[in-house]
Image (cartoon, rainbow, N blue to C red; front, side):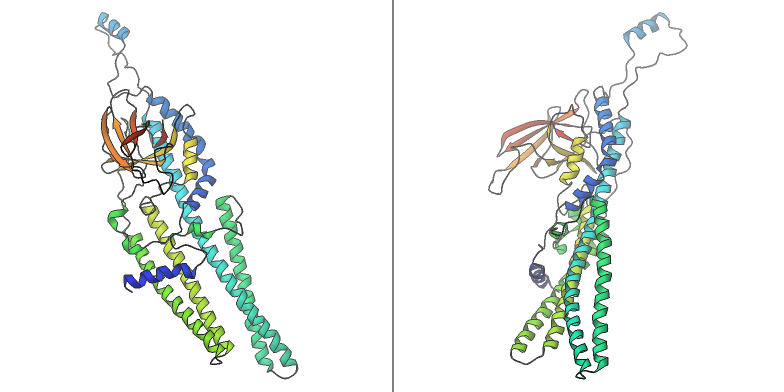
Length: 445
């Protein structure tokens, strides 16, 4: 299938699924998961933050010095057999490593649980679609079986034909019972993840992700996956930075994109055949039974397209997660950001929240929510919003608001535990804040 044909099929997706959008994906699932598992992480994250903020108050890269009193004593007793101990530096490495590791674990668990939840919600959605179709087919067959049973009593119908019709209706009844059981199990599993009741009016739009997989390239998938900080304190031994390889997930997504295109073509053909059958019935050129077969063939194609849509969406969500949210650009759900914000020491006053990630060239600052007035609030705002990062008076990075700021390593200067971040609107300064260079996330202070 060529790209033009695929695009036509993708456009038809909106017609096939009137209640759903072909690009409807949000961080709903990950957000629900992040909020639900938060209790297992918040207190420890809060403690590690407190310990790190306390340790960096006296952080220094200068050699520890012997006190003047000790130097005086040493000069009067040159032959002392033991050197006096140096003043011990505060332990920054331990809370730093602990905070990085636990933040990474929490974020990964939220993403993992979110992917599982999204998959179950898609399965649930398809089950509901299938249930509706099965009930319709059962009603038709039950009515037919009851009609034939009455005719069999008067000899107007063969008893075997009536019995076969009843067996066919019963078969659909048991299929419905089995499907209802599956739906019940899925509902319980979903509610165990979210911690809330799955409402009947739930909008399944929020869990699907559909985009043109043919436009995705490996070059654009080197996203941010490992938390870090703008500066790594002395004594910290970080594991080797893992390279992101998304080739397998990308290949899966491309193949499933083609599969969705093929399923949509089948549905379009089946819908056209049903439409023609309806016209033929009006002209008495076909029978109701033949039209029913065409309708059920269209329904089968509908379910096949729905399943293909779900399969592609699951593959794209997995690809997005592996690449560090390179597809959506949404690094973190608002629920997870709220949890992290709550774990920052109460003494730290600030606005919004930002994240820091490790990169092969240094680090990256990723604002998640901005201070008021530093970003556009509606589509009509055509102003250009940017921000710059400075450390020790020197610019170390700049980016457009909404984009990540990549910076090289910082050469630490004693007492300078913050980088300056300045926000601009059309080149005019609209906000001055600080960001902590030691932490994986923080507020704009």
